[in-house]
Amino acid sequence: MTDATVEADETATTHGDAHDDHHEHRSVWPVVGAAGATGLYVGIALVVLAVSTGMLPVALGGLVALSGLGGLVAGLVGWTREAFLADYASRAVDAVGQRSYRTTMILFLVTDLGTFGAGFIYYFYVRAAAWPPEHLPHLVGSLVAINTVILLASSATIHYAHHALHEGDQRRFQGLLGATLALGVVFLAGQVFEYYEFIVVEGFTITDGVFGSAFYGLTGLHGLHVTLGAVLLGILFLRARQGHYTPERDTSVTTVSLYWHFVDVVWVFLVAVLYVGAAF
Image (tube, rainbow, N blue to C red; front, side):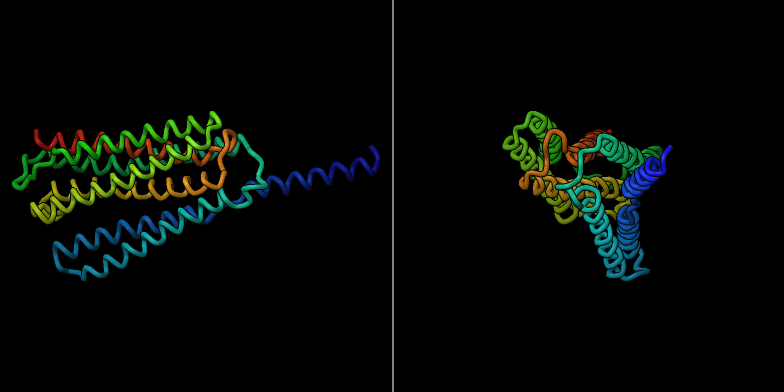
């Protein structure tokens, strides 16, 4: 083997190592987002504690919750920018990287299922005691039915939006993606109105016993997930308008679709257990 050949091999190895190091970059944004989510949950718990016991000022819990929400949003935005937007135009389509992001989203949803599972276990524990509670409002009505239809429709629109992208129909893809975002926002508005009806009109609040805490804890947690999903859909829609997505470049569309289908399934289970099931 000649010296020139050895030198060429060493150069190729060095470049390969540099290429591998580039793809092994570790991001700090997921940690920032997780810390923000922790602060948000702690802040909400402090608000509930302050309202129910008066041991702490409500403003303290609100400040912690807002700070946590800011950290969560910053983590999500930073992670999205770093993972999907940085050097987008010059980045080659990498099938391994696409599978990695999809797998990561699935793993996240599995852990998120544990979060919801803990809330449902608490509710089932409550049901095992004296039932029904003293103050139980009329939960099943036209509003929850309409909200359920809206959320299920949004699952259909994002599914067919992704299908339109694979067919190369950008106009239909963007239209259905925008419809999904609009349906998500309408769902959130409906949940806010439902809270207004329960809290202001009927006087049913989170401090009304264990059922009140279970109801608002689970529906509020789900509402937070829908809010984050709407933010992600908004990012997808803005990027779609800029022509970022093609049939080969759809990783973020796939991951957000998985997330959105997840929150829809959780809502159906939540309605069946918490709304309809509370009457029995």
